Image (cartoon, rainbow, N blue to C red; front, top):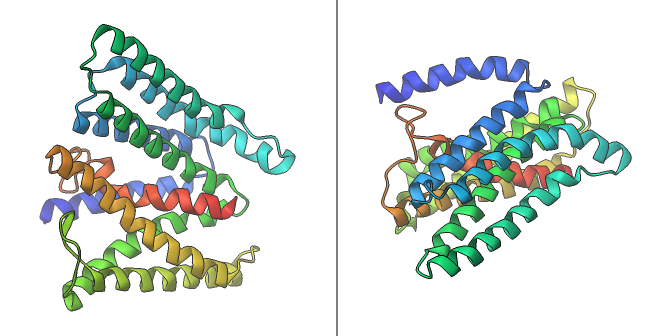
Length: 275
């Protein structure tokens, strides 16, 4: 517990300059880094990290995608001209994986393409989610809106934990996460909606942006749900491949996919809301 607290304090200190410089190129660079580490952790979990024909293109895409979104987002909003590289690169990767399958099958018909395809599919999710955080930040009002990504993930997680600890009686999905309860899920969802509406009220009062509190309530409800799905989905993968943590980047907390699993899911939903 002591190690977890120290790590949390260090991360809080690091978060201060991230907030200050979130409008600069350092922000997409940070998410490109997290994307690369997340993909690296996933491939290690699934045993496909040494498949360089798959892993190297995924690392490249993890770096390129947040930067492509950062450069292309404003032109998409203002001129309705999307950055096609951000859209087509994942599709090109799918075609590339199919090509790898063809040539691998010719050489070795026992190659585990199910594992490789699963690795690539989840990696695309990780990369797309990291890019979605950048997309939210680059939107009009994004200097405030990107905080909703973390509110949605962390408020749901924190209040689901405490609500479940106090009132939890019915297991949610015990085969995946034995400690999560239905009561905890409800508590996390309720408080997520409350925090979304509360933060939106502050934005309406103290900034030049006018946000719909009803829309924020809906976004909070959906964000809480997908936050738990993001958490549970990463847990399913860990259980399937028999590991405890994805990595050790954050001592006491695990790796990127252990700490940011809910954030990745919420980022995608909020990017869609803004779009």
